[in-house]
Image (cartoon, rainbow over all chains, first blue to last red; front, side, top):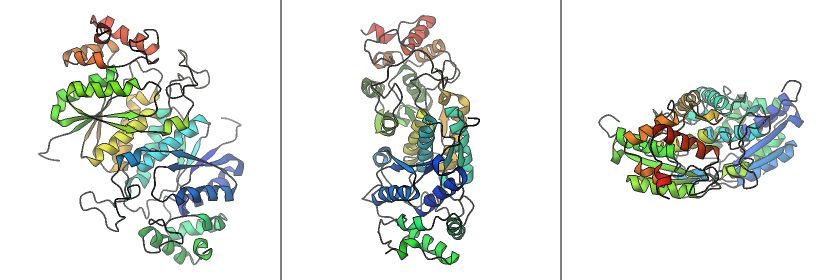
Length: 226
Length: 226
């Protein structure tokens, strides 16, 4: 790859964090080197896919949507199963929230790496963070490092997974978005676990987002746009 | 899990190797503790799914088929894309055969681990082998070990991936099948890359299988059954 442009692929969910990562990638690799991938895994809130497309369009990068029908077939979690309500508390047996889809990020990043492999893209960017991780073990740094190792071995590649938000608080993530001029794009994002737009304001995801903007002293462009 | 039965899930493709692994798992964990999972990833040869079902039924274990529509969407490989012929030689650019689906085994094992996680199954069994690996880096022991590590971290589980064929030659795999009384089930398996039944006999998969049986001095029950 010597002398060639270094390309990056951002896993874009259409939420605040992955949108910040998109602007981080553009800043680091250049607009022409960046594209985004979004997974249609049967999420109940189809608005996420629409938001991802809008964010990518607003930023001026290509977005591809890849289907994954397997999680819905596996069933049993609140993000894909309309028969299960999102609960605030963790499950007494597993110690995990019922929005946990086992292995979801592992699968997303593996498919992203496969897509990247086919296109000589050497960098993946994902918005996972362990500071405020909501009980998701596949968002931790140790998991991502281990996954990068297995992807490199399994695909004989030198893929690098970047996690610019890994150690940032929500406040710091908002400040990073401001510094990267990513705030205008926030008007097109979606965070609410209940799929509401305007956001419900009471689910854990809405609360966490509001807290971050409040602590940074910045008005959330998503709310300002309503 | 102390005092509980240890359960195992075999990734069953319907081929010779995974069928041998199924009998290995039954021998090790007991018939009642074993179930199988097969992935419908859009393989051109639908007969594989039928063979997997028949092998599981013959062995007396449950088989579940999980869909994965993502590989077909990714495209570009000879196992899922009807527009691409299987080639004998490796690709000059990648050094890999054009039957290579990047990350295929990583995805299979990650979804198998998710399915196992939901059912308190602590053991996965897969028929990958690095002795005669056909250019597939995701069949190597180092890859599997790294993947197990990332699955354990990403799902907070103690999942163990067993690869009983990892260091066996094809001859030794046939001998293991004989020792495990797995030979009768071989009549229901499918190996041919060209999807033929009776097998084409000339593709790399057919040649490898024939060589193993010949070296072990055992007649292939699949051919005897024709």
